[in-house]
Length: 50
Image 1 (spheres, rainbow, N blue to C red):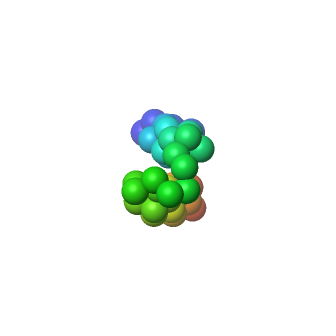
Image 2 (spheres, rainbow, N blue to C red):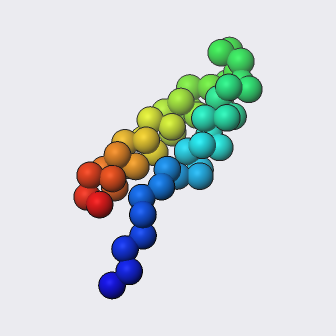
């Protein structure tokens, strides 16, 4: 069996960079923030299982 080292999600990094560019009053700001939270929680779960 091959064991792959844990790495942070590329999608999460992209969403964090997008969030830096969005203004606080942008209509999608809250959606992106929520998506980052759920992705981050999933990554933490994957890391714990690993």
